Image (cartoon, rainbow, N blue to C red; front, side, top):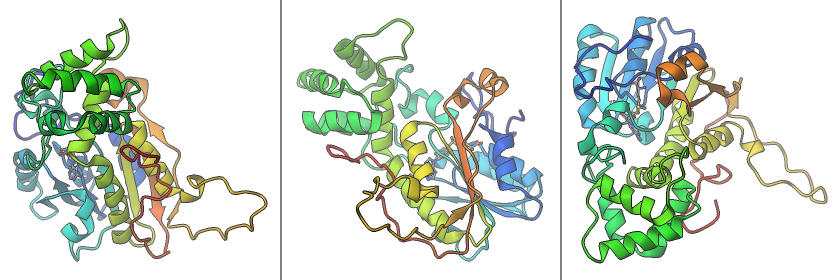
Length: 332
Ligand SMILES: C[S@@+](CC[C@H](N)C(=O)[O-])C[C@H]1O[C@@H](n2cnc3c(N)ncnc32)[C@H](O)[C@@H]1O
């Protein structure tokens, strides 16, 4: 697969390799002359491929560090590419009056974010406990050192699906009484101390780091808002493609496209509720990376692409109901 040209990435792992690229292009096609919003620009792998296929692209990213990658693309495609820094939850307002035919979201962190120790996303690399994609707001250290024990446990459970969340929270709170927890590796060691490590299993800190990252960046709130923003923005026939990297996100995308499948089972004794108008049609089967891609790029292993076309029905008001968004300390 093509690597994005442009600024050099200093990490030995290299810049972000676009995931499920061929499948995303297929889901958005036909591309020639199309106007696409790339809501998660990253290193610009999708944007570049879309431009090379003849599309016009408006790209969005909340991370200021992607600007050099965007500048490099703008130099190559001055008439068909523009970049806006912001969050995709506001993609319809960021794009403004521009008519749009497609939206793509590749949720989650980029390799540049994950591999840079100073960003604090990875438990494998010693760095400050930060995890803020946009460099603003509360950091992971603020949550780890500031939340009550029960709040911390509930957060790890809701956003990391960590069943041993109470034990982890207890160990963290005991450790921080002596001194604040400030680094990624310190937190990873504490989690390992709390719940142990089995050979062959994923690192015991995996779920907790996912939970903290989701909370710090309000990733699930952003996803819900971004999906509804795309629904407002796209005209009938417009295409939306979303790549998710874990089950919490994928469940939201799936239920957003097919709300009738996410609702509570109806009693056969109640009158049938009239079927809701469908905002999304031609909903494609979920697609995953094949063996060749996962071998070349292990980060593609958990990726799931879902896509659909917009119907002519009016957009819905934003609502989390039925999407399965976990609630901290409560039921989804
Ligand atoms: C997985 S990477 C995208 C990689 C990109 N598709 C490529 O081929 O290079 C995700 C990017 O989305 C950005 N991002 C995540 N959540 C966002 C949000 N809510 N709004 C805007 N950008 C976001 C991250 O900063 C990151 O750069």
